[in-house]
Length: 274
Image (cartoon, rainbow, N blue to C red; front, side, top):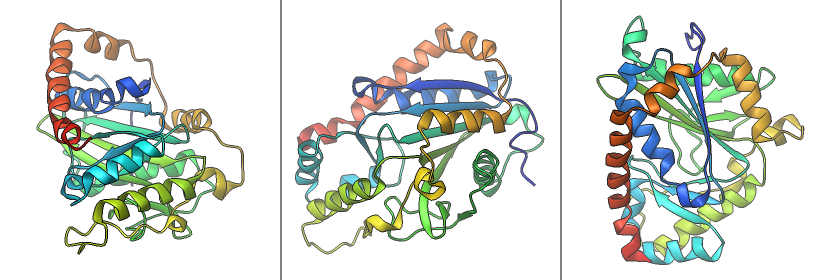
């Protein structure tokens, strides 16, 4: 049985403009390194505008420059996250959600599968009419063993990072918007990046129809704001006063500066490809 709601959550909501795209992972990394100071598990909601988030593996595309030019021509921003995985789209129809579990608040150190399952159970509680399944959707973009899907179509993907202080479980959820177009964008990105060379790196063969949105499945005019409210209700949100004190502390600001430097350095490879 899931323990995602065994105690109240605190929350941090972060709508980010393109100039602040890197802040999504800067804050993720800094919060995970500060997990021992959290007084409750934390939900971090964040959104981006017309952005493709690249994974470290995407650096191996033999024609990366051409693939990045395609994103520019289609009107998309992009950056590379400091974790594995592959490209995903984040726009005003995509909700990014992270759950931070500090070990000092847990009965035991959650296993990898338990941490993943907590996120799945939170989404099931927020959207009880959805018959959510987990397992890799092969022809989606950024396929993984904890893809979440309904009727065989992917609606989101989950990853996690952990250290000695805690774990963060990260989800992107396709709430609304044109998922077909998102799939076409990433399919074309990899086609342009490979240019018919042998795909020895196992980049995904993206079928746009392999993915859909919660709004389309439920046939409702759902927005990201609506989705946040449903998740907040399911998660038993408590006030975030203690989180504010952490995030304004000198130590946390130093961590943010350090993570900013690291993320900016990570982007150097992409700048060389511009």
